[in-house]
Image 1 (cartoon, rainbow, N blue to C red):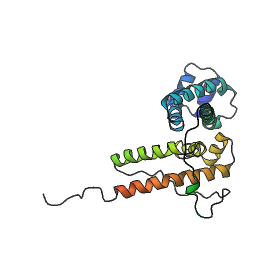
Image 2: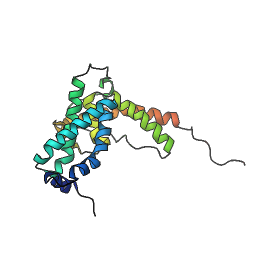
Image 3: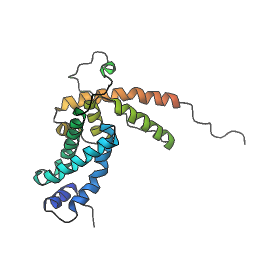
Image 4: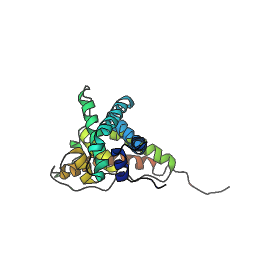
Length: 205
């Protein structure tokens, strides 16, 4: 039997079909949990966000009128839960992105730099780079971190990200641009450190 589309799954949930909500959790649960961990920084907080998102989903999916908006709606719920979680906690020190503004930068500019997410072919290098990037992502201010996670990790479009965060498209583009610039220095430093570090193949036996 072919896997249900999001539209079919949503209709099954609305009808209260046996196992429909479990299928929904199987499809989105792991991704929502990973999003919570990256956004909140702590597994316990991510668990709270995950549970709250599932509760809101259980209560609200039946009222969702546009099936194609399912993913966007879910990340809106999760993002709002993350924001509320942070408001209840003592603010932590976070870096400013002002130092990453290029010369002549205007916050109304919308140009995007090339995607930073291309990873090395070597498995060990990939793991090391992922760890370094995850650390850098965790240091981004929340608004920038949210946009970066939704666009570059979760794969939402610019418009979907704007809808999920309930902001305008130019704001998404600006935040994404500056978040990527913050990570670019880490990416360049990683490649510089690994340049020439690979052993020379071949040679005398």
